[in-house]
Image (cartoon, rainbow, N blue to C red; front, side):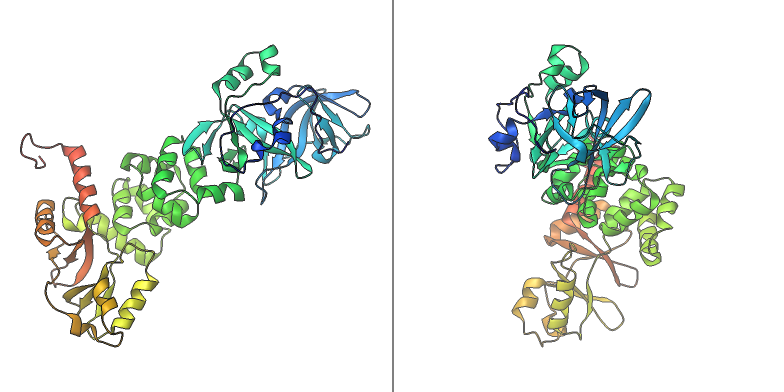
Length: 448
């Protein structure tokens, strides 16, 4: 019998509805009939080939890498008063009652965690994980091992309360696991181990399929360092998008728990007005620690935004605008739009004259309909964009939006040079934030 073979005899058979993907390995009959509970194994005897006790199992070690289902890389076994490591290659068989090794001669080593390894009992069981298919944060009550691809691997996570009780109370209930919900490991993002973040390609892959709003909900449902751990698993751009969807209070708490370098990286990828809103609510020392590690130009831009009162136009505007000259061609304007397509600035370009003063705002549809060689000056004409000053109060901004009915208004300085713009959703967010802080005047519909 090879080390990847787990005898079906004596193993609990889980006959149940599988939660997760249709191509889940848990849907395979041979896998279901070979599941072994990790929680049930802890404390069980580890024996040599002749059946002699070597010690008792303390934990199961797995390695994380490119594989979706992490293989068992070793065992931590208590031998006398010592905790020793046994290489997973020496496992001949395991069932719910014991583990057998393939040799009578075992080299016992002191356990030292290596990079990319996790301890299933200490690091994963009873910890928060993200069930991507179910779009929820759950606590793992148990884990399941099974032979797969010639190795013993983690294939499922039990999230049922029954299994939690099975671990807490001793006796026969512990030895006969009957999970109510098993989630395929391929759809799970495990967040942390004893030495840091578990970085698995599988976790990243499944998380990348989610919408920023869904990720924001998951982040908010996590606690403490596990929020940061989930952020670390995300592509930086996706992480920034998710942060923009978070509730203000939750986002503040998250930023306070991250390093200045990590916070700076995420805020640099967010819309400037969103970043400024976060920085504005931090104490000065923390804010400067973040700005101090940012690109100097961006840091200067954000300092200026933070300095504006958020009840004024300058405090809610975004500085992401595409500025072109009236003597530029339509082709160059379209090229600029394409190069900035990831940003929320796709409704057009802001045209300025030779002195940098606002002339017009030309929509994408106008650019597409025009000849590529045409100068932008030939497209300038009514209706002209609505322009407001940096110190315009919010109620006047609302009025301008109502009169303009456009997707945004342009913010200009005292020399009529465009410095930003306000989108409709920026205005809604600002009004909602102020209403929460200050309340509405009874019957007036205005902010008190």
